[in-house]
Structures are given as C-alpha cells and as structure tokens.
Length: 335
Length: 119
Image 1 (cartoon, helix red, strand yellow):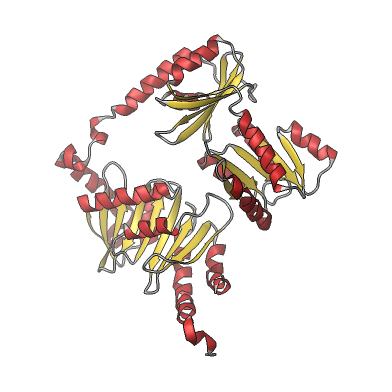
Image 2: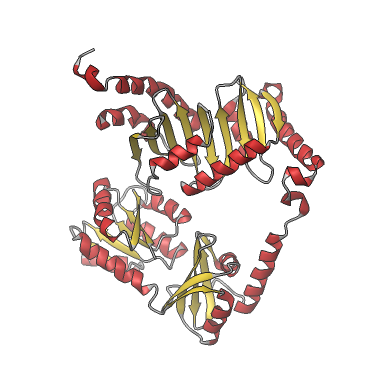
C-alpha cells in the first residue's frame, strides 16, 4: 500500500532534493510538497496524508503552529520535525507538542526515510484486514475494551478515515477535516473497507457521546436516506418530465436577469445531451487531475456567442453574446 | 530555452492563487511546465491534453472545479493551461495571458536557425 507523505519547508531546493531522494521509496510512499504551514493545512484538507515532515522556521505559519493544528484536527497523523536550529529545549517542546521525531539538519535522506517507514509500519502493528464490514468488527473492539487507532479505507469511494478507541469506547473519528460524530457516520456508511490497527490512541478527549451501536444504526439510516433522494432532484430532465426541466431553466434565467437585467447578454438557456456528455467528460478529467468534478465552465469557441455550462443534477447551458459581463455572470451563477 | 520560457511566464506564476502553468504543442508535446510549491504533484501532460481535447474546438475556456480552476487558452503555437485555486482572480489571469502570448510567439519563432541572428 502506497502512503502519502507531506513535506513542508520554505526551502524549495531542500524540498526538491528530498522528493528526489525519496524517489527510490516510490513503492512505499508518494510525496507531496508545501511551502509553509498554511499551504500544508490546505493540502491536508484534500489529501489522505499518512505522515507530515515539517521544518520549524517558515513564514506565515511555522512548524510549531502547524504541529498544534495537526494535533488538534488530524491527531492520527504523525509529525516529524526537521530543523537547522536544533536545541534540546526545542526538541523537548516539539515532543511535548506531539512530534514523533526530531531531526537536526543536515541529515541523511536515508535516515529520514527509515524513520518515516518505521512510523508508517506502526499504523499496522495490530494487524490489517481487507474487505470487511466495519460494523461487526468495531463491536468486537468495543467488547474487548481495546485502546487503539483504526484506520479504514473505502477503496470504492477512494476515502480514508480513522477511529480512536479508548478502552473500548469510541472517543473520536476523522475523515479529511471532518471530526467527531459526523466523521463517524461517514465511516460507518462505508460498506466494504480495508482496515489497519495501531495499538494506541493519540486521542484522549471524548468527542463522541453516543454508544457504538446506535451510531452504526444511525449511519445506516442516513445512508438509506441518501440512496432515495426526493423524486424532484433525482431525475435527469430527460426523465423528470418537461415541466421540471423547464422550471429549472426558467429559474436560471430569472436569477441572471434579476441581477444583470437587460445587460446580461443571455440569448438562451437550454439543456442538451451533447453538452451533458461534455460536462461528464470534463468532470472525469477534473477528478483525475485532483481538481474534483466540474462546477461551471465558460467556453469561447470562436462563434458569435459563448457558452456557460452549469454542472449538477440538471446540466444547463447558457448561450451568451460577446457583450455579456463574463466575470459578473460567473460570480452570480457561483452564488 | 527553459529559462527564457520561465521569464515569459514568471508574472503569471506570481499571481496570487496560481498553482502552475503548462504549455504544450497542438499535438500534446510539453514545451513548458512549472508548478508552484504546494498542493498535489503536477499531472502528466497527457492528462491536461485530454482535458483540453474534451473541450472540442474551444479557443478559450475557464473551468471551475470543486477544488480549483483551470484557464485554457489555445493559440496557433499550442495550448496554455493555467491551474489556479478557487479564489484566484481569473480576469487577472486572462489579462496576463493577453500580455504574455505575443512574447511567447516571439520566443517560439526564434527557434532554429533564426536564433543565431540578432533582431
């Protein structure tokens, strides 16, 4: 299993050298880069990071602040500090703050890589299970009164999360930057997961007040609800009936005209299966490029009119003249 | 060549929110690629090429995705792709492209034997 490591340093040369050095461990780890603590937090929001290596002295948000933010919001992610200004006091502060490693610069890339791999192995020290239903297994953890961190991966959805048990009680959960009960509901909604067990829990504060069983039942109920959304939002215009589609198109046109009046440059608002397919393709490419699905696009094809496409349950195309206030229109549609 | 290209794109790369710039020929060969530090690793040029291909004959496009924006500008020499965060000012990016594209054309036209002669 390839893990994702986030390297944080304002020294670009250092980052590139480390990334190159870690190239030989490509079978075990993928490397992402960030130039300071704020950039790192942005990456953490969107990427399933297994471990962070950070410098201490950085602009905007330094390593200590980043360490505190990770311990607060991503307590299962281990942090290793690398610094060119190492003192015993600094190391003590970093360890007290939750860092699992402290390395003074200069260092050998191999020794950092070894430390990273050792930390990553700890994630699975209690064992690994593939394609299991999480509910049954977690009730065993409760019965055994285990203290552990369980990392779960739903391969079908490409999502990862963590559950923190203290003496059999579920204290906290995390998926991305979601924590507590909402994160637990999300995880319990995953059907077949791979999970690994680490025999301790960095979390000591109880953020989840409910017992495991009611949580699992509530997650199942929420999942069922998601599967059967109200008829009005479920269907594509081609199936939902002409009235629904016409109503939707009229609403889009009204929204634009209310804000821009006759200066909107809108010529027509319509649904079109060729554009639907194009929107789907763009969404697929966006997902592959780590940008997520398409929300909206402005397309100039060299025709007398340009096109704005809106993604969603009912993809919509708006043909606009060249005098259309493009940025204003995009802003209105985004809102 | 790469330094010259970097010089052409440096203002664009310095705009707040710009994550990176890719420029490739109409047949999909990479001419220039640079990503600012932060965020995920640059994707393969073929992935950007496929994205642009799915736009059909568009000569310019501004695409807003869930986690970022992409500005695409097609020219006779190739395709420029600017990757941005969600709050990047796209109007500024368009303006920058209007300014840099003539310079880029000049760069590209000095390839081959012409580069040995002073203009």
